[in-house]
Image (cartoon, rainbow, N blue to C red; front, side, top):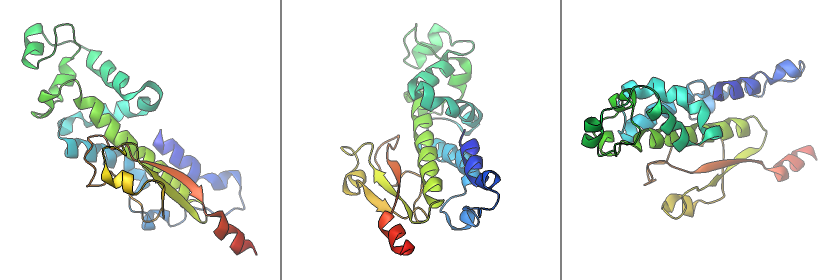
Length: 207
């Protein structure tokens, strides 16, 4: 999903043959590689949260494209529903009610830490990774605009001092990172970026 979005931006010159490619050199100056952001976001979420084993990465990769349309909890629930379920005894060992859903595949992806939160492990990992990807989209979009910038909007302003202090702060897209700030206490950082353009600078240049 993100790759298609990025390709549509990077290949904009196909729709305007004489226009210069606005992304020439972007990969060298952004704080992340747009081509690898999906993989990097998933790796960061798995490593930071520690709820899933690294072997769960293919599952998260397959589920990510569905999250925004279906919701993180619904997507993670469908993953836990899909396939042969754990026995009642196995569910009890994970403190899951007997009629709760937990496939053997999903259970095998849980780390020791994730076994303490078996119904939240996939959900939180998906949420954290997907928000990183979404912030990356905004950075890429802003970087394609002359005088483009992003405004930081805290999704969890009440729980994160950094979000509260920097709410609506304008950030240079070439200095922005899509990854959750280390100061954020939330498992799934809800910080969002809004793309904007410094129209004052645009008008000054046009004079």
